[in-house]
Length: 248
Image 1: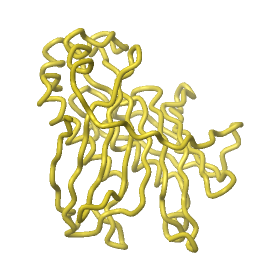
Image 2 (image 1 turned 90 degrees about the vertical axis):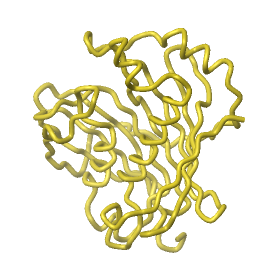
Image 3 (image 1 turned 30 degrees about the horizontal axis):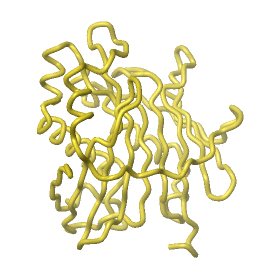
Image 4 (image 1 turned 30 degrees about the vertical axis):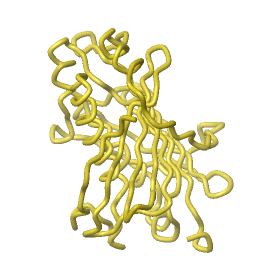
């Protein structure tokens, strides 16, 4: 069965004050291995760019048993785990010392770079996906979603040119940093992040003004919405689930 593997050693600048890998860098690892796995299967970013197309992330669901620590060597595994209409699924596993410590499922779309809109999945990618044998995919636990617009915390944000990627918009890794920045500092200090579910709804460009909004839900859940302030459009929505200290 096909499974792409890549080894990383956690660097000091990738960790938080507790010496654990931060969520944005975890997602960067996912992005790196997804890029390399796609290239190995003939569907690289560069090949799509030559066609005027690009991969864009639509949704990512992550479950964390524990985060790797500074200098720890980990193996990140990935494989395409199916498709449905315009959606292409990719799974990830984080291994440390032979033990699985985190997992994720991502949903990807093909994007037309000139028209700045979605495009059908090219036939050559469908052929690859339909003929590759892969392990079973991860089935995430569905997290609750916000029922109203009454968000407690609001933090301004404005990405810069340094946040722009090859697709000409803000890289999705930054959104996971915004998840953490939208919450009060004591949340991360007093709890452990266990699950994340983030959906990308609009592309963000350098210079856009955003409001990072969050509120507490029931049973250790927090709801998130990133609002573009000039048109009041939500560019992303999501939920994080945190473990209380007695569950560490």
